[in-house]
Length: 536
Image (cartoon, rainbow, N blue to C red; front, side, top):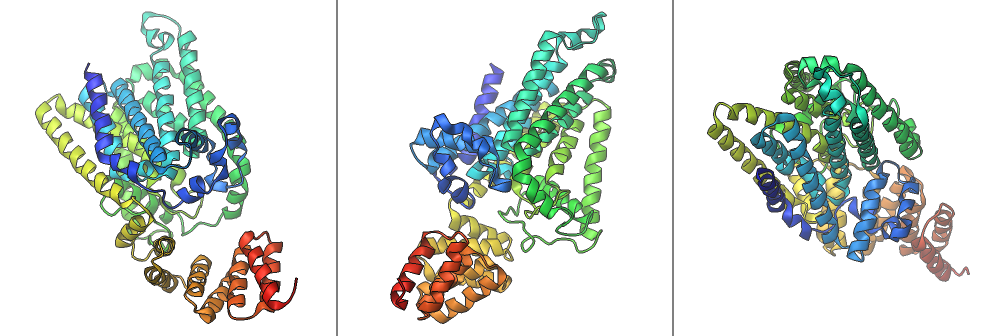
C-alpha cells in the first residue's frame, strides 16, 4: 500500500509542477520537428518509415519521431495539448521507474520517494519535460531505467543470488530472460537518444554498489552480461546513426569550440552548478550567450575541475563501501560525458541533456535521506520536504517561461542578454504575431551583437522590405548572400531587387535560386519579375 501511496504522490507532484504545460504552444524546434514535419503525419501503418528519416542529422532520433506519429494519430492533427500531455505521461513513467529502481537498490521507502522526487521536480530537468522536442531525453531515460530494472533482476537471479548455498555461478533461465529485457530496453533507449550508450557503465556502477563478497563471487557472468549489452548497443548505434550523424561528425572532427580540457571542464562544471543551484536557467548556452574558455586551462575551468574531482572522489569512496550514493554521484558524471564537448558540436550546453544525469543525482540524494532517517527520521523527512518544495516551486516558475516563443525568448534574454539566438528568435516570434516594431527592435539588437549573422540579415531584410524600406532591404540581402550564397538568400535578394525596381536583375537572381532548389516563393517572384520586366 505504501508503494501505491508513493506513486500517487509522485504523480501528483508532476501534475502540480508541470500540469500548466498542457496549455502551452509549440516553441523553437517544435515548429521544425513537429508542426512542419511531414513524417509526423504518417499513418500508423507506415510508422516504421521513421527509421528511414535520416536526412535531418542530429535531429534524427527515430523513437521520438515514432512517438510524435502516435500523438498525431491520437489527436487527429498537430494539437500541442496532446503532445505536451504525452511528455508529462512519459515523465511520470520515468519518475515511477526511478522509484522502483531506488527501492530495489536503497531499500528505503522514504529514500526511494526522495530519489524519484528529485527527477520529478528538479528545475534542470524542466526543459526536457515542458519542451516537446525535449522528449528524446525523457523517453531515453525512461527506457534506460527500465533496462536497469532488468539488470537488477539479473543481479537477483537464482543462479547469482543463490551462490552462497553452494550452487554454481550462472545466470539461469530467469537471469538470461532479464538480460534480454535489459538489452532490449537499452536498444530502444538508444533509438530515442544516443546517450543511452552509457547503460553498460551505469549497470556496472549498480553492480559495484553491492557488498564486496557478492561482487567478487559473480564477476565472470555479470561482466559477460555487461559486455553483451555494450556490444549490442554499439552495433545498433552504428546501424541507427552512422548515416545520420557520420558526415556531420566528420565535418566537425578536431574543431573544438574552445581549447581543451578547459571546455569540457567548464561544460561539466556548469551542469554540476545548475544541479546544485538551478537559478539562472536558459534556453541558450551558445558561444554568444555562454563565455567559452580562451586557454587550455583558466580559473573557471580549474574551479569546475575541483568541483568535479570532489564529486568523483566522493562517489568512488562511497562506491568502495558498497553505497548506492556513490553509484548515483558517478552516474551523474558518466551520463554527462557524451554531452561534455569531448565530441564537438555547436550546442555548448543544453539543459535537457542533464535529464538522465538527474536520475543518478536522485539516487544519491535518496540514499542520503535514507541514511539520515535511520537516526533522525523526522529531520530527514522535513529536510527532504523543504528541498522538494523549493525545487518544485522553481520548476513551476520555469514552466511558465515555456508558454510560447515570445515568453521563452524574453525569459532567455533576462538571463543571457548577449544571446543572438534569443534576440533573433524573439524577433521572428514577434514578426509572426504582427508586432512589427517590436520585431524590428529585437532583430536590430541581434544584428548589433552579430553583424554578419546570415539568418539575422535575412530576417531584417524581409522585415524592412515589408515596411517599405527597399534600399535597406537590398543592402541587408546583399550582405546575406555574401555570407552564404544559397537558395534562401538569393530568394530574399531577388524580392529586394524587384521591390526597388530592378526586375531584369531579379529575374536572374530568382533563376539562380530555383536552380539551387528554391521553393514556391522564388517561383512566384520569378513570375512577377518576368511580368514587370517583359519576359515570359
